[in-house]
Length: 167
Image 1 (tube, rainbow, N blue to C red):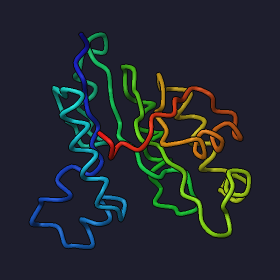
Image 2: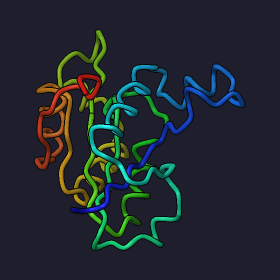
Image 3: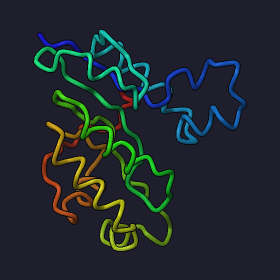
Image 4: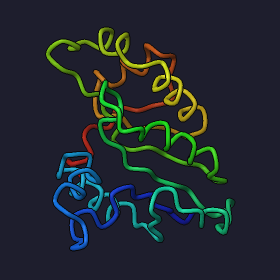
């Protein structure tokens, strides 16, 4: 069995007393439910090692023995935290297979269909998504809306798994 390496982009967001409320909210994607599912996935997957997403220690790990898991959230949308682009660059450096879990699309009143949302989304973000999905084993998406968004930009290596808060 492969060693599960968990890339946690919100590590300690909920319980770090050195962070202000604003910093904690930012690290959790302005959604405290993200903290709940990130911690639940760690238990369900029997994670052997948790790394802060971006940690250079990945170079020390044996690529033949590891698989990476990256919990995601609503990374498909018109907001821009730069996360998708940063995650894409980091995944390029990971020497072992990576699986994304929990990818969601965030619609709005105006952009309420996958077609409208994807037409409005910046090309840089679409490019980063395509690059990221070329390098991963599979991506678990939250629902059919998200799946259709990915299909519209040519991404097919995903599975509809539901919202990770179910875990």
